[in-house]
Image 1 (cartoon, one colour):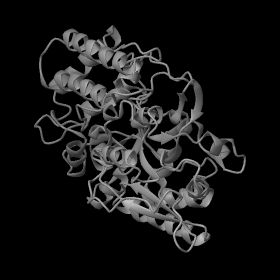
Image 2 (image 1 turned 180 degrees about the horizontal axis):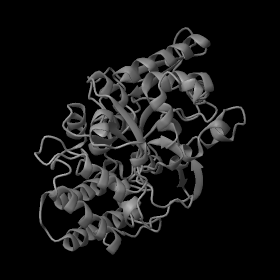
Image 3 (image 1 turned 135 degrees about the vertical axis):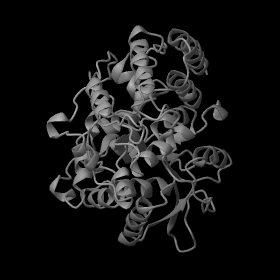
Image 4 (image 1 turned 180 degrees about the vertical axis):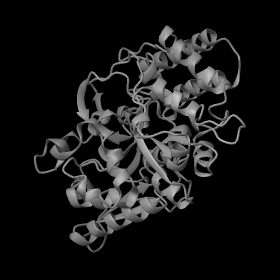
Amino acid sequence: MKGMKKFAVAGTALAMFASVGLSACGSSGSDGAGADGVVNITMWHGFSEADGKTLEKIVDGFNSSQSKYHIDAQLQPWSTIGETMVTKVTSGDGPDVVTTGADNGQGWSIDGTFQCVQDFYDDSDSGTADYLKNVTAQTEFTIDGKKQQCAVPMGYAPTSVWYNTDMWKAAGLTDADIPTTWSQLLTVAQKLTKSDGSQYGLALPDSGWAPFFKGNGTGLYNSKGKATIDSKGNASFLKQMRQFYKDGYSKKGMDETAARESFESGQSAMVIVGPWEDQAATDKGINHNLFAVPDGDGTYEYADGTTGSNTGSTGLYWWVTSQVGDSAKKQGLYDFFKYYNNHDNQVKWSLGSAYPPNNKTVTTEELSKRPLIAEVAKSTEKSFIGIAGLKGGFGDIAATVDSVSQNTARTNDDIDKILSDAQTKIQGYLDEYATD
């Protein structure tokens, strides 16, 4: 398939997920029907913990709810699920449906690895009217000159600022001190930092800053395919962050895993991460709460007119692979999507996985067993995928952005030069894939 090698999964986007052993793969045949007439559907996903058990229960429930289809849910490593899927689909021996992010999904929709699902959204009985618009907006692409929906929501997880309530209280902070701007967040981090080096205010990785460039600056590139990272707004943001690290309010050189460990060990008072931190902090005995990631004063504008949002998201979706075509498997998958995202199953999914619901009819009261997850859900409509809208080159651009943030935090290199070099690289990637 054209350009197939270019749409590699970027490990940085999925680093928060644990790798697990590769399962057997493949489907039952062109239509998936076995000797008993049941249509067999192969699903790939990477959920290996409580989220995986919850998904398994929902899949089992679907299989038991009808007799036409049987979904075989297979566990794959997040680190290689995309690359393996591409190879297998090319040979016709891959999964029928796979979970991956919108950042890779657009390229794979364009090159034909995935088939779009606009007809599912067009069906008034599909339940898509109850999907959160911000979640579905991330997978609406222009394919062959036509704008259409190419995926179905699976797990959309906004980031939040998680904080150690004991440290918060010890620093003399109250609810009145919860920051509403990025600058206020950095000030609170300063108050939570101990001068003897025994406690950092914020465990902030120096990678994955794409949402912060949008919230505090001008973003990375615009909808016209022009790089925008080399701007005064971005330079000002980076200078502010370099001073933040120099002043010792966050430990340097951390990735997201190290940042979470710093928070969960009691080394740092705050961390910015997805909703899975609730269970992790609980397991480590950390008394905790959360607040929304504060806005910045950036000028980047999303399609809905939103500016200033620093709230990123891990956006995972169900993608139908091209080997399904118009076979009987397609209707089976559409029936499953309707089942998975219905009201009751989204309550079950949210309570079991810590992901906020995709269905807007789920109420805060129904999530009362996990009140912090209900609180996370309030940020969904203002959370965005950091690197999106690409035909290809996600991994290359993500690596370039990480190089910018790491050079900012770890070196004294000239920030204007750092951004100028990144501008050239990102524009090169945008031009390369625009012509494919």
